[in-house]
Image 1: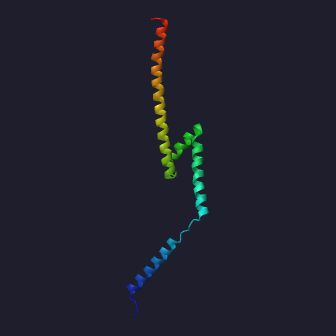
Image 2: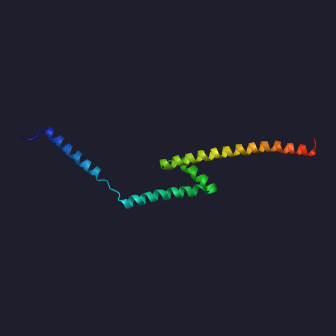
Image 3: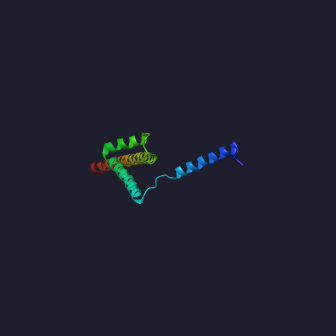
Length: 119
């Protein structure tokens, strides 16, 4: 009552499948201390990023490099692009407000000068 060749091959394949699943399930498990240390590392890297981008000229260069570099992790790349868009929006709004104050201020000063000169 021996196994046929086909049954023997199926049994070997099934045995290899079981061994592979056992190896896949034996991934290293992080302890609570390792998880805490990993989380602190992430916070440290974000803190470093925020400190660098607040340096006037270097920060702009750093954020542009972060946005364009291929090796930058997805989260940091998304943050860099969002930060650049935010800064552009703030600059456009600031320039618009200053321009409006300039235009209104010129007319206001002209009015005061005409009133003072009596014309």
